[in-house]
Length: 404
Image (cartoon, rainbow, N blue to C red; front, top):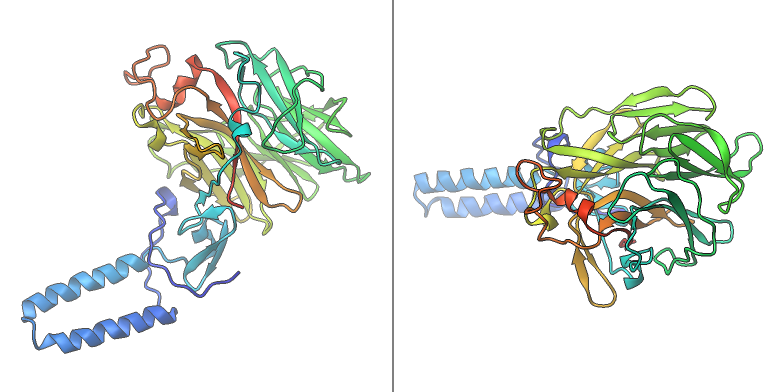
């Protein structure tokens, strides 16, 4: 719903999303405030010494300019997660913040604390969720050996009637992996119109007419840790470093560069990194990528450490970066909460209407805000950073309810 409110709050984004100084004069309440303020000045002018009054005027004008410096002028100022109306961002749920830059969490069912059996000491590290024609949810998650997050020997196929669980990991057979960090795309065959379910893992796209399989070889994709989507008859994907978007109309043929993603405005790459992309196109046709992000020099107070990043674009070619679309702490309906030291491999879940409802992520199930700085096995700059505690802990898969 459109709004004619005016706002003076700062959206707090960093990097190339910082907006230039603007003074809005189209907002009625803003004009009325200015008129009342300057009328007050005229009344006070004769009773306050000139030097003092000059100082007050200067401070007030600086404040007026500052509070309006983050007013939106285009939807890009709203992170393309809302619309700019009357100088303010009106956000699409579940996005919130002055620039619609933050995913709003809501209370999550306790069943979502670990989607796989937490008593099994083996590790999972998230995977894609698709919805079958009968409304049943299907999840494909590699299962790693105890103490490992590399070279999974098998991939689990879980099903659930509720996306937050409980999940059944036994009624569907395990699947071969030949890789890690799977993605999934459900799309319509442009020739037959049939629905195709695809799993992207280990450089191979596996396709089936059913989320239960059987899956067969459907083609290849470039890079690792893919973030694929299907749009207007073509496939697009980016990969681990999120530096390029590639495209093809045929999974059996060559992929071409669709866009380069400029990283020049990001923080010092010695410390700051993005990985684990998930890419989608919203209802307005805007493109988005959400990542796990981290600084390898952050090892204390992990609950306030960098954990995520967001890229957005009107056309998939020219991208803007912002930081921290999601954070570390989740509230559960059993009255507990947990601050996760890291939340990685983000995947977003949309309902049948296209509404964004959940964020499923890989999580360290052991360490929280306290981190693990005293460990030495995976240390950087003399300490083990927040994102590296997972290597020695029980790693798992959780899902977070969003305020939709």
